[in-house]
Image (cartoon, rainbow, N blue to C red):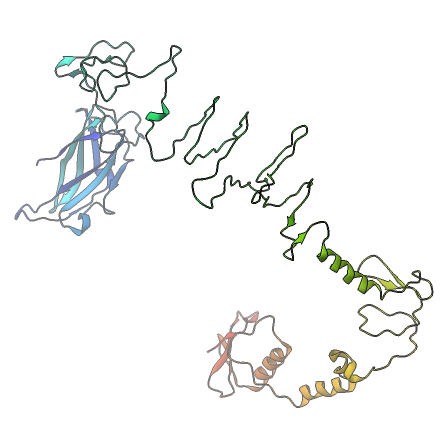
Length: 462
């Protein structure tokens, strides 16, 4: 009987398949008795078996007739299982034996596979390799243990390699300063995309004609001048703050201004001002969404003041608390009148009224609160209660188990139903019937041990 030979990376799981045939006809035949204890592994021809069955798994549950294919069987071996410490070693040969199982009424033992354990793969399917020589020539003695020296005859097809950085055209070199810094000509940086610089210090005059994005803090020691954008109707300097930060925070010099706009037409400041405004204002273009206010006179404010005066003209001129004055004490909505009130009160009183009242006019049923005017008398309440008890009728409770918490109507209904309707009793069951005397609506189990009679909790029928 032949068997397969495998080269297995250390730690991999090796599936092992084998087949069985009938001795008389050669047809595929099933087998019996396969267990992980029947699998034995020998190392390098030693007669000592692996001491543990851990890591052996029967495929397709029992390992017999894999995928319902008669005569095809299998199991797997996990070479990473170290229960028998040190058994699986790289470079060793292992022989897998199945002993013993029953095939065609015969007890058989056989070699299922042989494998050699190789070094583990760093990437699945890509074996690691150690190279002893290149084109038949042994490696040079490494300068560092384990690291071979490499002599390169050609680099990028250049016979002479002056630097590790190789130019696209032979003979070109990189501009390097005497102190080791690399030179960079921005005119040679050809890119239509944005160029990202982690840090950049510019000491001379600099002109930016394209899009420039600064994600960190930018300081200009000699001021910034921004010319008109080439795109029509585009803002010269759009700045947006983050969170509670300001769009522009301007700090004045010793005698200067935080922000100064030229007086030329079109140079207005279009923004909210949270600080002080020093200087003249030609036009205030926004006044809470109302008419713009111009010059030193604010007609809208004058109109508001006149409206306030119209309202206050109705207040009494006498001192509060004195004759003819106001008698309301308190600083909020929960005020109260603490002095005798001789005038008429016309309107609703939402608070409490304590003390004597001279007279109340208009106190009729129509003016009372709906809840008060419709409130029933004790006699009416008594009549309604008697009506429920003596006139109203209720159907009997329906089929089901009575719940622990229910209405008084249901509780009385169950008592009347159990008293009135048909009831049967057997040695094991109590049954309460519907009004039709046929359908069992409720039942309970009963028992008697000659000492105690027990009736269980009422449950639903039938």
